[in-house]
Image (cartoon, rainbow, N blue to C red):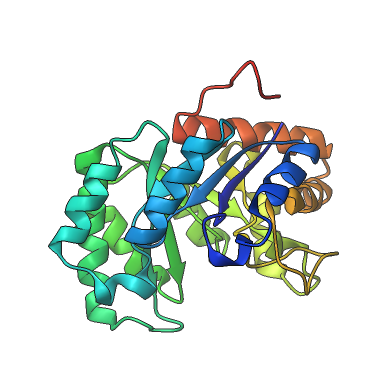
Length: 259
C-alpha cells in the first residue's frame, strides 16, 4: 500500500488534467491521497474533491503565506467545513520565515489561533515550518497539540527527535531523492519507520528522476524507494508502514474497494 500524505490537487496547476492525475496515481498503486487546503477557497475545493473520490481525503486551514488576508469569518467558515467527514486534519498551518510573504508577527498570531482551533475541532495538525524551527517548536509545545505531522520536514535529526517526543510524525518529501539533500537523508535513515510519513507536496518538490516536471501523487513511489534504499529495507515495507502511519494519524479506515 502507498499513500501520498500531502498533495495539493485542488490547486490550479491540476486544472487541465486533474482526473488523469488521480487515475495515474491509482494505476501506480497509490491507495489514498490527502489533499491539503492552504486558504479558505482552496480548503473548500479540497473538501469538494474529496467528496467526489473515495480514495481522497482533505484538510483545511490557512497557510502562513495567506494569513495576512484572513478575518474572523474565515475561521468561522473553516470550522463549518471541518464538520465534513472527509476532513481529516487542520492544516497546513505554521511559520515561513524564509519568504515572509505575510508579516512575521501576523504569522505568529494566526499560527497560535489555528493551533487553538485544531484543539477545539479535535483534529491533528499539519505543520509548515521553513526557517522557523525554534519558534515553531516552542509554539507547538505551548499549544498542547500532541498529534500531527511536520510536513516536508526541513530540520535535522535533533529537531526530528523533539518533534517525535511531542507526538508528531516526520514527513519525508521528494527532496530526499536529491543528491545534495544530506540532512533529510540523515533524518530518513535515523528516524524509526514507525514515525515517518511520505508525501509529494504536489505540484511542488518533484522527486528524481522527474525533476523539472510538475509533481503528482504517482511519483510518491520514487520517494518510497529512496527511503527504502537509505534504510536498507524493501520498498514495499517502507510503503506499507508509512501508509499505515498515515491512516493512523488521520483516522482513515481501509475501504474494501481500495487496495
